[in-house]
Length: 185
Image (cartoon, rainbow, N blue to C red; front, side, top):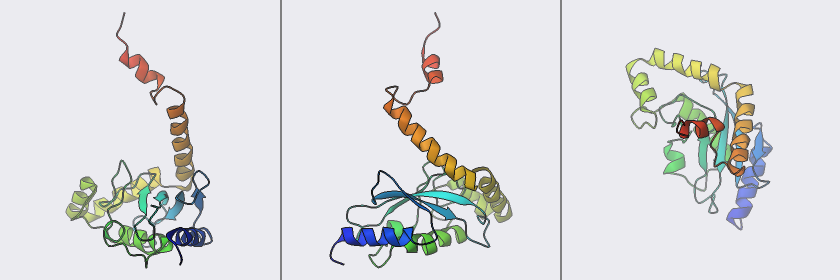
């Protein structure tokens, strides 16, 4: 490879030509969403997630930023932001890896083998360590409520609605927020 930008293009194209649905953002290849399914033989099986990927300028020498857009109950995923705590992405990334590794190996392994000793979601971690059966039931409930095919379409619509609200001059405040902030006459 002659440059990181050529490698970035090649890796994104390879991901797009795979079985994953890839949706670019702002017509570039530096930021995109990927449809990801929960791995077989796990409590996440049957779940669909939209995973947001941002590639830094120095990719593949610097790791991609990965985050779940719809909710997932997992010890190593922050429930609110969707950020992922995964050593191979955050600390031990190597240019040997590519985007297909992230979706075919790293994320499935994360869901198959959660690490409750290094949590981003302490509720999920403590429940997993205390009662694995109840943890797996809660995972399935989250999959049912937040990780169906229709949910990932809704996530994209909501995020574009958020963008619209942010640009309409109201600073993202809804009319309910404005009313609640006014004193009674």
